[in-house]
Image 1 (cartoon, rainbow, N blue to C red):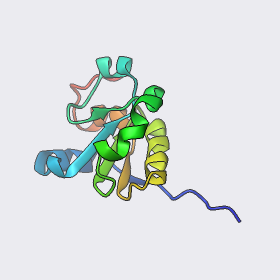
Image 2 (image 1 turned 90 degrees about the horizontal axis):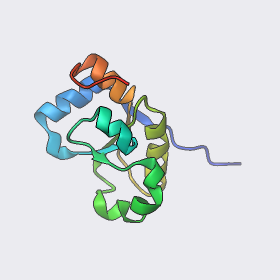
Image 3 (image 1 turned 120 degrees about the horizontal axis):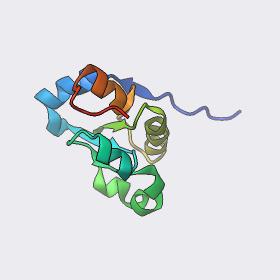
Image 4 (image 1 turned 60 degrees about the horizontal axis):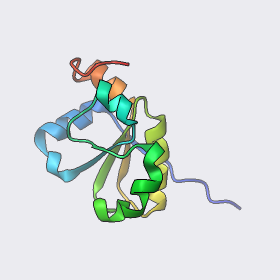
Length: 117
């Protein structure tokens, strides 16, 4: 019998927007997109941890972020961030959420000044 991976909890861009407006300090925000993607579009409150640079930042993730803190992970559309959510949970993070639709949904539904790509 194998252990199935834990399901990933998702949050939507509307909820993120409300939380950023009312209680941003309670969130840990991680953007796993690559630097060239951030040059096109970004949300200021997110910390960039590009998946391609995983060996550089992964050893210190537990010191950089509180494993019990609410952590929202974003990418372009939601696939890479889902991978990161699984990895964070494997590292003992207990309150991880994937941003459904990623920065693309954020631009389309919340802030049209964030460029689409």
